[in-house]
Image (cartoon, rainbow, N blue to C red; front, side, top):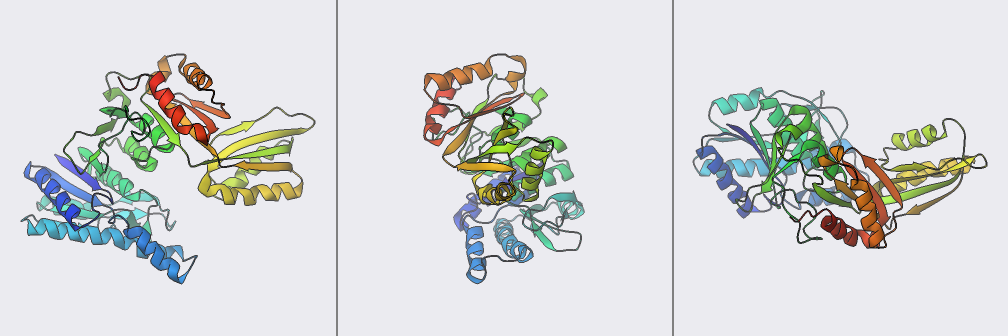
Length: 403
């Protein structure tokens, strides 16, 4: 069996934890498996490197940042390989370059274009444990690139796909995927299985266990993903094809995203193409727009409301200001004191009334819904941030997710 295992920053946070990972990897190898390990930088290391760069510049060149930040994962890979060698295992540390990971040219936010797994395959044939520095690759010019936040998850899934691995295990500091955040709702239950689509929704809606790009890639490459803890032997959660899940739950989880801001545009000129102009300008500024509501035009103007991540709010304001100054928008307002709570489940496809039950729950708790967005398997509601945890607990109870 060929297994790809990825260990995050908290799992390799210090030398003792790296030793613990080495024992876990050794156990997988002793069980007769071929093993490829993908590692993140030690927890805190990336922030430390960013701090070093900012000592010299508040806006360092992205290419130099890639060269700098990619070193964190290389340190971990080398240390884990040394620990395994000392335990009597033949291990080889590889950079993203040696592992054959080729990306596009977008520094700090690169996307993997292809993986040439030859070096890894040769090492595996020799019986070696391969330890790959995650989060990084090289572009066609040979320049070091990094994959953005959560990029080591992406590295692991892409490598598992390229090697046609039987399983890709993502080790973190939590034991799996829960019906909601256990810190908010102590009765939250760990899921044994969840579909790619459900996990994609949960990841994009605020669940922090897995990076949504990695889930998207796992679905595309048909990689069976397991997320589990590196600090215990408890079984994790399998993320797989919907058809591999016998009993599809009506609702699988409740997600909460506090990283949201609402932008309201009032008195927008009602002309063909105005929405296109506004949202193309936001896209050009790399602002990630989520929910959008446009009202029916009155007196040749309309109102448009939409949400963006808080981190994109400044860039969004710059774009909106240009339309205000041109007279295309009469007025604008911004609200960061909101959150998005979402109900997710593949069972919604074949059951009516899921959304109605969510709205009734909000009404019962006297929580006003500001915006609503739906898909086949999710219902998302924007509400005031002060009601975030009450909404999560109430919805979790409504759908009886603790049973």
